[in-house]
Length: 105
View (cartoon, helix red, strand yellow):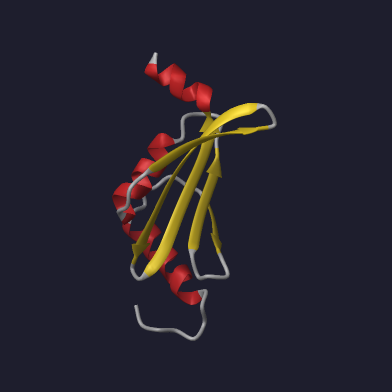
């Protein structure tokens, strides 16, 4: 992509290209931050690992998994961050840790 004086334009164009080239990607909520990073987020009640895996395959990057507690609820989060088309793309998905245990059983 060429340098553009409008910082949010490159991430917006990257999002359009990503979705056009990979229409199979699961929907997530997209935002463009002050740093021109394209951020996708999704909070699920089911196992979210396949969502992040799909984005990792499309944009490259390594999936990172962490766990945390939110209001006493043990949750997991998977994320992938990569530079795609000269734009930093960050996709984060949160889901109940119990879903991982159910899948493993």
